[in-house]
Length: 161
Image 1 (spheres, rainbow, N blue to C red):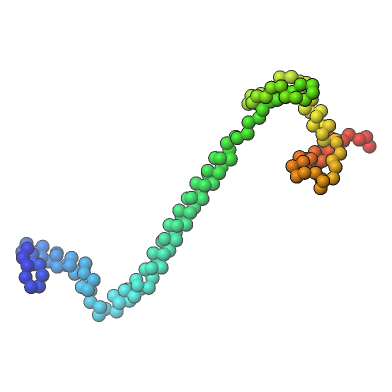
Image 2 (cartoon, one colour; image 1 turned 180 degrees about the vertical axis):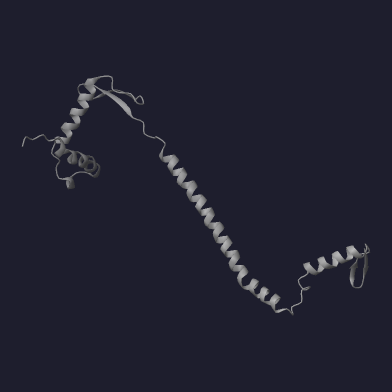
């Protein structure tokens, strides 16, 4: 390669020189003459609408990322929701109602004694049949518990017709 006043010149042969000249023509922006109306129209089109096309691609990419994030978060909520976090406990009480022993219940286990089942069922029915005082006078937590019992009351009353 030699250098003269017109720039670098290659002394590699006419074929290689022609390829380099074509490459310089294609790569330089001022190589294409502005005299063609088609080139001017294409340049104007690109100037006007290229930003819109880029913005549309960015919007689609952001929407896709948001969709993926939403699906991941929804899957996480389902996974957390399917986990069991409550642990039932069994309390043994004496005749006065004082707790003697408290331990976690066996999963899927049934009460060993039939008397426990009958007592719990009788206690539920007694509580459901009791009349509920005015709910406006009760504390808020009692209202929530008692509303279930009031709703169950008509179904447990056995009145002959």
